[in-house]
Each structure stands twice: as C-alpha cells, then as structure tokens.
Image 1: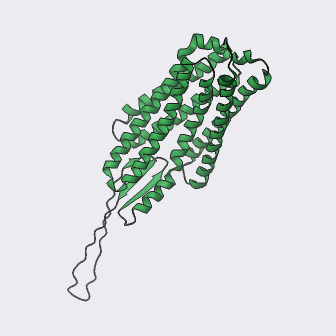
Image 2: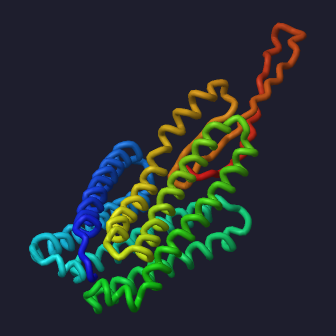
Length: 312
C-alpha cells in the first residue's frame, strides 16, 4: 500500500472487531436463552448450538490475535499494515466453517419441509455451501503463504471474491426456497396467516442481512485499497451464527401468538426445532334422540388432523 490511511485501516479494523465482539455477546445471550427455554430439544440440536458457540469464541480469539499483532507488536510501524497476522487467516477459516454449518442447518430444514423435489432443491444448496467453505480455506492457506495483503490481492483476488459471492448466492437460494415453502403453508392454513407471515418476515430479514453483509464486504474488497472489507468480514460470522439462534428462539413467541389468536379449539400450533406443525381439529357431536328415559345420549368425537410443516 503506497499511502497508509489510519482511519480506513486501523480505525476500520478496530470498529469491526468491536462490533464483532458485541454481536458475539448477543449470541452468548441467545445461547443462554435457548438453553433455558428449550430444554426438551434433541441432544443433537444442543450439540450443534454448542459447536456454533465454540466456533464463535475461536473466531473472537483469532480476530483479536490479529489486531494484537497490528496494534501492539507492530506499533509505530504503519507500513506493517500490509502484513497478514496469523490470526486473520484463522478468522477467515472459522467464518467459512460457521457459514457451512448455518447453510447446512437451513438445507436440512428445507429437506424436511419439502415432500417433493427435496433432493433437487437441497443438493445445489449443499454443493454451493461446500464450494464456499473450500474457497474460504483456500483463502486462509494463501494468506498464510503470501503473508502480504498486496501480494494476495494481486494474485488471488478472484478466490476471496468467489467465496463471498457463493455465500451470498446460497443465502439468496435458501431465502427464496423458505419463503416459497412458507407461502404455500400460508395458503393451506388461513387461520394461522399472521403466524406464518411472521415466519416469512424472520426468514427475509435473516437472509437479507447476511446477504447484504457479504456483498458489501466483497464490493469493498474489489474497489477499495484499505481494510474496510476485513472489518465487515469480522461481522459476517456473527450474523450467520445469530441467524440460527434467532430462528430457534422465536418459537416460543410464535406459540404464544398462535395461542392468543386461536382460543376456540379450532387450530393448534406445535413448534419444534424442525418446524411448525399446524393441526386442524374438527369435532363432530352426534346425539341419539332419547325416546325413553333409560336411553343415554351418546357423543361421538371425531378428530381430523391435517399437518403442514413450515420452518420455525
């Protein structure tokens, strides 16, 4: 870098790391809330959440280790901003793995929710997600090898760019698929229209946030000669991790919303980590005419259950 800008390099890195740590605190609170509210969730889901939290912690360590090298070890030598501390490639790798776990989580949900064409829809998502983590690990390897941002950008710009582009593409594909599934469930259960509309909003917000972050980071990487792109990249991992916990923790609120709207015994809403199950219960009462006092009135209860699965 011919000209060193303290604000767009050191300042951006500091703000990115602080925002990343703040979002990590939000994730910790979400994990705590999840553990208190959903103790009956499957063990596998709890292990998955624990793995996300551990990776998030490792990401924090790698980010601040990189900043320690830039801010403390290389203090007073702004020309060293071009060097790549070992913590930065590690943060890129952890971001890639976290992204793969989150994409796999939503791909698994889509697979369970679809009754037709499930492989046709989920296989492209999984393949693109694997390619994305592959490019992330390749980026980390090349950063460790080159040890210079200028050299890495001159020779391997397309690798980092393609990794971010694949991440955005998978986000868009997952969001569109989930919204299509939810819209279909909405038309099948008009009485739970408000709840399903809330789920659609959750899906759109989560998908739009992660997509916007990766696209903006990629644009900054391509058109700017500073480290703003890396500051945004610090935040991407946190957004993906929080998106999973937000989807899981919203189940209690949706259940209360459903219960407050349906108190007539018509429809009931059961939420689980795998999705929302809507039951349509209809009771039919048949009374025999009592021509004689000894005849007893009979009541026949017929329960009809219709199930639709949508993501929660």
